[in-house]
Length: 83
Image (cartoon, rainbow, N blue to C red; front, side, top):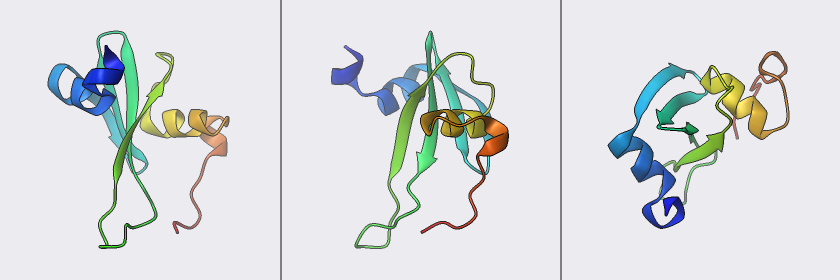
């Protein structure tokens, strides 16, 4: 059902933003946790796409969620340059 409805729509309509930092926003919608991020690479028209990535419920910050998607710990994830 979540695949048909869409993670972004589900989070925005029935969830709540619980934390935000320079890496993105952490959302909770029931038992679903997701981190909202903006693509560092611009589209051909100059806009930037937004993505919602599922993360485990143990994640406490957006930075930790983004780090988790790369298989890293929060303290090991730092963006030096965005391309």
